[in-house]
Image (cartoon, rainbow over all chains, first blue to last red; front, top):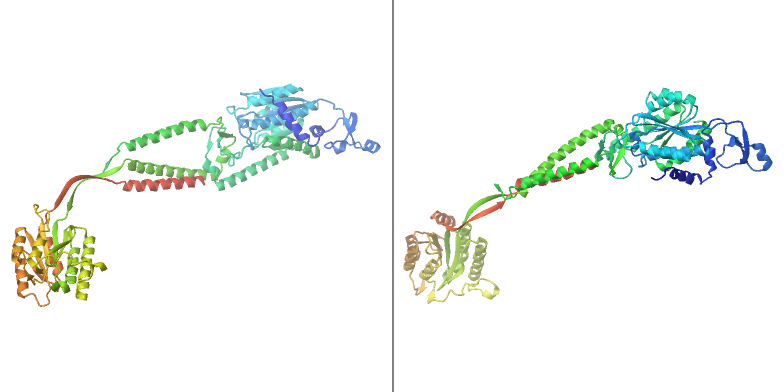
Length: 295
Length: 338
C-alpha cells in the first residue's frame, strides 16, 4: 500500500521551493494568534516572515534584516474534524475524488504542524459512531490518519452529518486547540450557527470546504454523472440545455457566496478547494490571510 | 395482400426485445456510483430542485415518449416492408382482337388521292387499341409494307412515310427516286401484266391474314378507284368471293371526284357489300369514324396466352410510414441532443 504522506510532502515542497521552505514556517505561525514572550534567538529574515517580527535595532546594527524567534510556550494540538461521509467519496470540482483532496488538506496542515512541534489528531464519524484519534506528533501517526480518511470514505458509506459531528466535538473537547474542519460542499445548516459559535470561543477554528463537481459541465469528459445519494443519473440531454446550464451556474455562484458570507459572519477562517493542485496555494493563502487579518 | 416472409415481424420483435434486454443489463451495471465509467457526484438534488430542470425533465419525457412512439411506427413499418407484402394475380394476357389489312392501290390513277387515303388510314389506325394492322400496297402486284402488328407508333410512322412518298410523286408527276430517302412505291408492285389489277390486289390482301384456323374478326380496307388496266389473275368478283369464303369483310374507300355512282364504283360497292362491308367516298368526313365503329362492332375473339401467376411487391404505405418514421426518429434524436 502506497504511503500517502510522502506524496503530500512532495507536493508541498514543490510549491514552497519556489520561494523557500521557511515560508511554510512563517505561514504556519499564523495558526497561533499571539506569541509567547520568551525570546529565543535572531535569525536572518527570509521572505514570508512576519514584518512585525523583524528586530529593527539588530537589523540596523548588522546591516541585514534579522527576525526574532520566540520559544513556543506549549505544544499545540491540531485536531482535524474530517467528514468521511458518502458525499466525500464523490468527485470534486476538478475531477479527482473529494476524499483525495481531504487527504491532501490534512496532510499539508498536519505536516506543517509536526514540523512545528505540534501534535495532530483526528475526529471522524464512521460506521455509526464518532471516532476520535487523539493527538500525537509523529509522521507515522499522520500517515495513519491519512489512511484512516482514505479507508473510511467510501461510496457505500453513510451520508455525512457534520453538524452532529461538530456538536459531539464541542461537547467532548475541553482542551484549547486548533480545530481544522474538512467538510463537504454544504449549505451551512441553521443549527450549525450555535455549534460554531461555541467552538469558536474555545478553539482556533479553520473551515475548509471541498468543492463539488459541476453537475452540468462534469469534469470535461463525456462520462455520465450519477448521484452518490441514490444512484440517480443526470440524463445527458439536460446537461446540454443552455438555459438550465445558466440557471445552475447562477445557483452555484449564489451557494458559494452564501457560504462565504456565513463563515465571515461567524469569523471562521474559510477556504474552498476544488482540485488537488490548488490545495497547497489555497491553504498557504488562507494562513497568510489569517496572519494579516486574523481570519 | 399476403406476406412472403410472414415470420419477419416476429423475428424483428424478438430482436428488439433481445436488444432491449441487453441494454437493460448493460445499463444497470453502468449506472451505479461505483462504476468507473460514470462520475459519482454529491448533491445532485441541487440540480433536480431547479424549476428549470423540472420543466426540462417534463419536456424531455414528452420528447422521449414521442421518440418511442415514432420508433414503434418505424419498426412496424419496416417490419412489414421486410416481410414483403405482395399481391398475387393469375393473369392471362390477351393480344389483338381484330386484324385489319390496309390495302392501298398505288397505281398512277390513284396517285393523287393516296396521300389523302393514307391520312384516312392514320385516322382509322388511331381509333384502334389492341387490333393488329398491316399495310399492303399494290399495283400490278402486291407488296406488304408491314405485317400485322399492334405497334401503333410504328404503324403511324410507316403510314406517314408512304403518304409522304405518294404526295411527292403526285407533286412531281412521276415516282420519286428512292435513293433520296423517300419510300419506294414501285419496288415489287409492277410484276404483273398491266397495272391497277384490283382483283389481284384484294386477293393478296385477303391472303395476308395469319392464324387462319382461329375464329377472328378480319377486315380489309380497300382503297382503289377500281379502274383496271390489264389482265388480272383474279377478277374483283372472284376476289370478293374468296374474301367471303375466308370470312373477311371488305370496306372500300374510293376517290369521289366524279361522285361514287360510276359503274366502277357501283361494282366496288356491290362487291364490298357482298362481304358485309360498305363503300365510302374519300371526302366523306364520317368515313373514318364509321369504319372504326363498324370494325369494333364486329364480334372480336381474343388471342389467349397461357395463364401466369404474377406476384407484385406492394410495400407502398408501410414503406412510406417506415421511412417517415425513421426521419422523425432522427429529427427527435437530434432535438434531444441539442
